[in-house]
Image 1 (cartoon, helix red, strand yellow):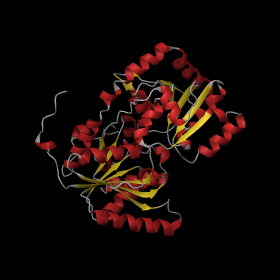
Image 2 (image 1 turned 90 degrees about the vertical axis):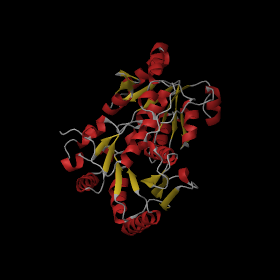
Image 3 (image 1 turned 30 degrees about the vertical axis):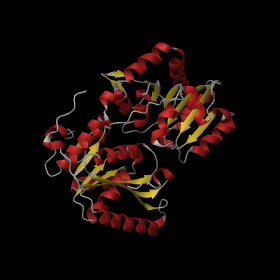
Image 4 (image 1 turned 60 degrees about the vertical axis):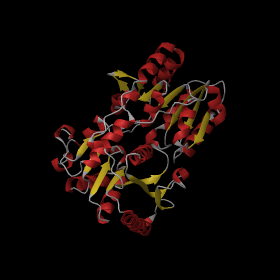
Length: 391
């Protein structure tokens, strides 16, 4: 492959400091994007650090470039006040040139905190859908973007951009669209080796997903598939508040032996888990991009996903779908789609062959280039070609 020209716009920026801020330290989609950006931008000469409001899991424990303000989610007004004080203090101590905020609370709390700490250049990232964002937080976000607390506002799909089409013009002119890139999660393990590593049944028809175990991820719809075929097992990689409810449901229905929670995985281990599966199921009811489904499809797993506009947008190459889309809350329809990819090799082969093109559609380098350009161009207006269209 021909190397890109070393144009002046790509010259390193040694010493320029970036601070990436988001609420909870755990392994999930927004954290994966921030992790990839931190590492890639560091190789381009930026000094990069991540800051989390609080620790949710041990995913970032001991990381030398990570600051965690609180050991757990703050409770009550005094806990919140201590967090805010620590947050502003840490930003002042870091003295970043640019702050990148992620997720809705990361934006509406991290953005103003950065400005209070004296940071002029704040980039908000809209990694949360309106379903995930409380109404009062949406109002605060609209105010922050309109008043210019955020210098730029990044959306990562055309579908998510449309949620802001009716916002004030002062907000919309700050919005830019940058597709997520992703790291190839292809594993070197065989299916048998991968299943042995995670204690999964060697000879089963194994469905699986990588997801936070949260009601918005709708893992219950995947668990319900166990009632549609007694030969199927389901493996879930992730952690979250919905696990106890789902385990109780499986116990009640007599499915416990076929439901396997493997817990939160480090990004480097996700590919090995995917290698254990026969089909990836993605019943989420709320996404801005669907990174986990993209990663699964690209490594060659057939994907059956909930029919969301954003998933139909991103899980496609040259306009052709890279997944089967269904109403995941219709157990019979969901199960029928899973049966098709398991029992009709031609369908699975077509989906997986097409999905290899996702690496070219969403290359990691393109995402990093776009953020690099965005950071370098903060003193200039957003180019008209990158602005959100007027409603």
